[in-house]
Length: 371
Image (cartoon, rainbow, N blue to C red; front, side):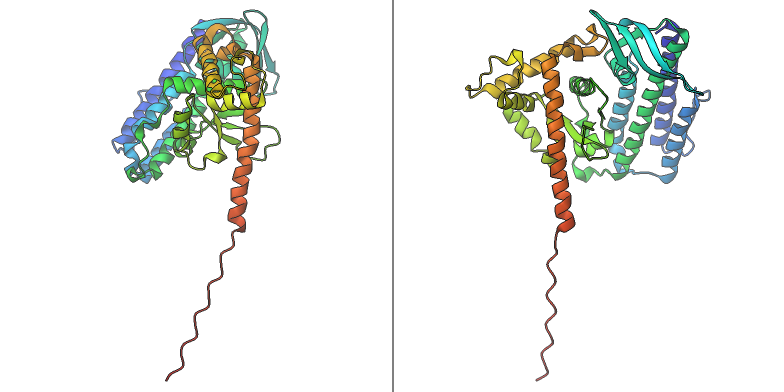
């Protein structure tokens, strides 16, 4: 994008941050009328943040949950900053395809000049690429402004959802629940999750990052909707880069109803690849006869994925392009199958609850006749 658009994004980003931090500080101080920034919000969409905080303050929300709130708020604000990360690598856009709507034009996709060939980048991929530090130079001023608006609108929308979840968790959380405050993912773990998202969404958008509430309360990192999956919000996916079997088992033992989740990890992918003899060229060393073939394959898969993240800005689509096509296909096929399996487990449990028969109570014995 142009320097003007980048400067505009930076100003909007700062405006949002100043407003939200001001509201958060006032809320924690117990002020019913939060102190406002020196000037009005930059755009009307920010008024909902003022209303959200004002309503929560008036309701006197969960004081017990205040212990967990700073960690949650910092995570949400950090994700907002990452979603609008300044680009480190620029790729020229050959064209921006815009739908001619009667009122508001909508950006559909960009045609980008990649390292070896032209690449089509959908809007959801455009938004995702920003997290990797990738930007696009757009010669058309009108299209450039539209793309900048897409990035801001998406980041602000996600920030609003995240703040809603902060209030929701604060309201129900109690220190006695024993949920560790340091649950928030590491930067490396977050990048690994987003690489999985990019791969799942390579051909079409079927997955999105789970809400903070689901991450905190239900160990859910991603929601995915695959074909013929009868599940409104999609299957729940837990992502981990753990490749060692013992550590993997230990992590899964902490997840309630783990059979109802898709566990997406180098180890689970390796097990699928080795047992189904999935054609992965870089796994030739993991012969079926080796007793340690699955752990060896897990380490190899992990190395490929982490290596791709180290070269995130070499392609318009980010690190996904550095992952072997066969491994990308394995990830999608595995998640597709596991989404149906885990949903089947959920439906069986729901059916058991519906059909559970409560044994009839025995009638009270008749009183003994008087002697």
